[in-house]
Length: 340
Image (cartoon, rainbow, N blue to C red; front, side, top):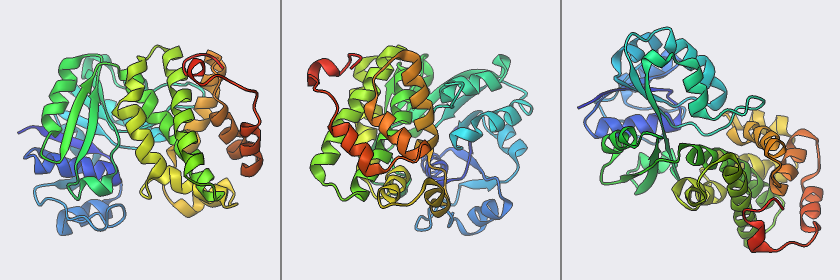
């Protein structure tokens, strides 16, 4: 049995804690609001995020970050990308011994263009940081807490730490692979949210399966091109955290990014969508970062650029699609990893 704290009681953080508690670990879940931690402890429910799930009775929650940090030999960071730095900085001031950090967030910080692991490493003093492992893949929280078969990846440049995380999470409904390409896993996890927004826009405009298949395929080409230019391994993008995560996020009704894109495609403004969702839409922030990365690495990302104009330049979704369809002729295979 391992003492583990999960930092963040949203849907995925709660699902992660659910798995760890079911696996017999001493898991403490940190919620920012005391009313939420009280509900989890007293009713074994998290009605705000997973209303239909019954949480294990051995799963405990707290609203004290200090208590959570002190409890866990391993800290699982499950907060939105925009909160990674602030929460990590808070944690850093509470640490007294080295800990292994695992993150389950999916995004890239605009302007700095840092991945999640890079932000954590910048905020946590090296003397308190064993390593950072990314836990990612095609995984909706709603299905995990129903114990539906799910497969994800633990990624770290130190494969021994990835294997440690693999051992902690594996059970009969959650299978975990390992991957040493931390950069590729984080890039795929972040950028699939951008393409999922685009898939939602396509559906919102009333386009069919042909359009979505093209969007997913060409979206994968964009993600792969950028990832390879940044130094990631090409094969990572054909795996769970590339193609797998892209498929589930572009096609599922559980996907926040797809829902947000769908609302945009139906004519709502970004402000209206954000207000209506009531949750963080990671793909919006990541679209800005992807736009900046494409410019930095001189990589062609036409789908990303089209979505950027819709989100940040008030372009009409239908016109953006028309412009994509009327781009100059290309060769598909050469286009995969080339700068086209």
